[in-house]
Image 1 (cartoon, one colour):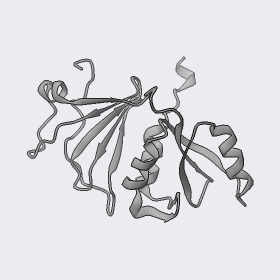
Image 2 (cartoon, rainbow, N blue to C red):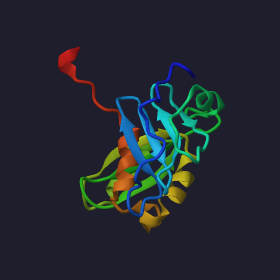
Image 3 (cartoon, helix red, strand yellow):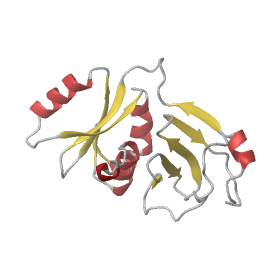
Length: 170
Protein backbone atom coordinates (compact mmCIF):
# COMPACT_ATOMS: atom_id res chain seq x y z
CA UNK A 1 0.00 0.00 0.00
CA UNK A 2 2.88 2.37 0.63
CA UNK A 3 3.33 3.04 -3.08
CA UNK A 4 0.06 4.99 -3.21
CA UNK A 5 0.44 8.69 -2.52
CA UNK A 6 -2.69 9.85 -0.71
CA UNK A 7 -0.98 12.53 1.35
CA UNK A 8 -2.46 15.42 -0.65
CA UNK A 9 -6.02 14.08 -0.55
CA UNK A 10 -8.00 15.84 2.19
CA UNK A 11 -9.98 13.78 4.73
CA UNK A 12 -12.80 16.33 4.92
CA UNK A 13 -14.21 18.65 2.25
CA UNK A 14 -17.20 20.92 1.95
CA UNK A 15 -19.85 18.57 0.53
CA UNK A 16 -21.85 19.43 -2.57
CA UNK A 17 -25.35 20.68 -1.72
CA UNK A 18 -27.91 17.83 -1.65
CA UNK A 19 -25.17 15.37 -2.63
CA UNK A 20 -25.18 11.79 -1.47
CA UNK A 21 -21.46 11.76 -2.14
CA UNK A 22 -18.85 14.06 -3.64
CA UNK A 23 -16.06 12.93 -5.95
CA UNK A 24 -12.82 14.86 -6.46
CA UNK A 25 -10.36 13.69 -9.11
CA UNK A 26 -6.64 13.75 -8.26
CA UNK A 27 -4.44 13.47 -11.33
CA UNK A 28 -5.00 10.72 -13.87
CA UNK A 29 -5.43 7.80 -11.50
CA UNK A 30 -7.11 8.69 -8.20
CA UNK A 31 -10.64 9.80 -7.32
CA UNK A 32 -11.51 10.59 -3.72
CA UNK A 33 -15.11 9.93 -2.67
CA UNK A 34 -16.71 11.77 0.25
CA UNK A 35 -19.99 11.05 2.02
CA UNK A 36 -22.84 13.55 2.48
CA UNK A 37 -21.01 15.16 5.44
CA UNK A 38 -17.86 15.61 3.37
CA UNK A 39 -15.85 12.82 5.07
CA UNK A 40 -13.51 10.73 2.93
CA UNK A 41 -14.75 7.15 2.65
CA UNK A 42 -12.97 5.71 -0.39
CA UNK A 43 -10.33 6.39 -3.00
CA UNK A 44 -10.58 4.75 -6.41
CA UNK A 45 -7.26 3.87 -7.98
CA UNK A 46 -7.85 3.40 -11.71
CA UNK A 47 -4.29 2.15 -12.32
CA UNK A 48 -4.93 -0.92 -10.20
CA UNK A 49 -8.75 -1.00 -10.71
CA UNK A 50 -9.55 -1.06 -7.02
CA UNK A 51 -11.28 0.96 -4.33
CA UNK A 52 -9.36 1.79 -1.17
CA UNK A 53 -11.97 1.93 1.59
CA UNK A 54 -10.55 4.38 4.12
CA UNK A 55 -11.10 4.00 7.87
CA UNK A 56 -13.20 6.80 9.35
CA UNK A 57 -11.28 9.49 11.23
CA UNK A 58 -13.60 11.76 13.27
CA UNK A 59 -10.81 14.35 13.54
CA UNK A 60 -10.29 14.53 9.79
CA UNK A 61 -6.54 14.25 10.23
CA UNK A 62 -4.12 13.54 7.39
CA UNK A 63 -3.92 10.06 5.90
CA UNK A 64 -1.13 8.04 7.49
CA UNK A 65 0.70 4.80 6.70
CA UNK A 66 -1.35 3.22 9.51
CA UNK A 67 -4.56 4.27 7.75
CA UNK A 68 -3.32 2.75 4.50
CA UNK A 69 -2.43 -0.50 6.27
CA UNK A 70 -5.94 -0.61 7.80
CA UNK A 71 -7.72 0.26 4.55
CA UNK A 72 -9.84 -2.41 2.94
CA UNK A 73 -9.22 -3.08 -0.74
CA UNK A 74 -12.10 -3.87 -3.07
CA UNK A 75 -11.02 -5.07 -6.49
CA UNK A 76 -13.28 -3.67 -9.19
CA UNK A 77 -12.47 -6.32 -11.79
CA UNK A 78 -14.12 -9.21 -9.97
CA UNK A 79 -14.42 -12.41 -12.04
CA UNK A 80 -17.42 -13.43 -9.92
CA UNK A 81 -19.34 -10.31 -10.98
CA UNK A 82 -19.60 -10.52 -14.77
CA UNK A 83 -20.92 -7.72 -16.88
CA UNK A 84 -20.68 -3.99 -16.56
CA UNK A 85 -22.54 -1.10 -15.05
CA UNK A 86 -22.99 1.70 -17.56
CA UNK A 87 -23.96 5.37 -17.73
CA UNK A 88 -25.65 6.27 -21.04
CA UNK A 89 -26.96 9.67 -22.08
CA UNK A 90 -26.85 12.43 -24.62
CA UNK A 91 -25.09 15.78 -24.42
CA UNK A 92 -28.05 17.05 -22.38
CA UNK A 93 -30.88 15.49 -20.44
CA UNK A 94 -31.30 12.38 -18.35
CA UNK A 95 -28.66 9.71 -17.81
CA UNK A 96 -29.48 6.00 -17.68
CA UNK A 97 -27.61 3.85 -15.19
CA UNK A 98 -27.97 0.17 -16.00
CA UNK A 99 -26.13 -3.10 -16.30
CA UNK A 100 -25.42 -5.56 -19.05
CA UNK A 101 -23.24 -8.47 -20.02
CA UNK A 102 -23.50 -7.40 -23.68
CA UNK A 103 -23.16 -3.62 -23.58
CA UNK A 104 -22.90 -3.01 -27.34
CA UNK A 105 -26.22 -4.77 -27.96
CA UNK A 106 -27.85 -3.09 -24.95
CA UNK A 107 -26.68 0.32 -26.16
CA UNK A 108 -28.21 -0.24 -29.61
CA UNK A 109 -31.56 -1.15 -27.99
CA UNK A 110 -31.56 1.99 -25.83
CA UNK A 111 -30.52 4.20 -28.76
CA UNK A 112 -33.31 2.76 -30.93
CA UNK A 113 -35.87 3.96 -28.34
CA UNK A 114 -34.36 7.42 -27.87
CA UNK A 115 -35.35 10.53 -29.81
CA UNK A 116 -31.87 12.02 -29.29
CA UNK A 117 -28.37 10.68 -30.07
CA UNK A 118 -26.89 8.87 -27.08
CA UNK A 119 -23.42 7.73 -26.14
CA UNK A 120 -21.85 5.61 -23.46
CA UNK A 121 -20.66 8.15 -20.90
CA UNK A 122 -18.87 5.75 -18.54
CA UNK A 123 -18.55 2.06 -17.73
CA UNK A 124 -17.54 0.27 -14.56
CA UNK A 125 -16.76 -3.44 -14.42
CA UNK A 126 -19.22 -5.50 -12.42
CA UNK A 127 -22.96 -5.57 -13.01
CA UNK A 128 -23.66 -5.58 -9.26
CA UNK A 129 -22.46 -1.95 -9.09
CA UNK A 130 -25.79 -0.90 -10.65
CA UNK A 131 -27.66 -1.33 -7.34
CA UNK A 132 -24.97 0.62 -5.48
CA UNK A 133 -25.33 3.53 -7.90
CA UNK A 134 -29.13 3.41 -7.80
CA UNK A 135 -29.01 3.60 -3.99
CA UNK A 136 -26.32 6.31 -3.82
CA UNK A 137 -27.91 8.48 -6.49
CA UNK A 138 -31.57 7.90 -5.49
CA UNK A 139 -32.18 11.62 -4.73
CA UNK A 140 -31.51 12.35 -8.41
CA UNK A 141 -33.72 9.58 -9.87
CA UNK A 142 -36.22 10.81 -12.43
CA UNK A 143 -37.88 7.50 -13.25
CA UNK A 144 -36.72 3.89 -13.14
CA UNK A 145 -33.07 3.80 -14.20
CA UNK A 146 -33.00 7.40 -15.45
CA UNK A 147 -31.28 10.09 -13.38
CA UNK A 148 -31.02 13.84 -13.66
CA UNK A 149 -27.80 15.36 -14.95
CA UNK A 150 -26.84 16.47 -11.44
CA UNK A 151 -23.24 17.45 -10.49
CA UNK A 152 -23.04 14.38 -8.24
CA UNK A 153 -23.93 12.06 -11.13
CA UNK A 154 -21.53 13.89 -13.43
CA UNK A 155 -18.74 13.65 -10.81
CA UNK A 156 -19.04 9.86 -10.80
CA UNK A 157 -18.96 9.78 -14.60
CA UNK A 158 -15.81 11.94 -14.48
CA UNK A 159 -14.31 9.56 -11.91
CA UNK A 160 -14.85 6.60 -14.21
CA UNK A 161 -13.62 8.40 -17.32
CA UNK A 162 -9.83 8.54 -17.67
CA UNK A 163 -8.25 11.92 -18.29
CA UNK A 164 -6.89 11.82 -21.88
CA UNK A 165 -3.12 11.88 -21.99
CA UNK A 166 -1.62 14.84 -23.82
CA UNK A 167 -0.43 13.33 -27.11
CA UNK A 168 2.01 16.17 -27.72
CA UNK A 169 4.18 14.87 -24.86
CA UNK A 170 4.42 11.34 -26.18
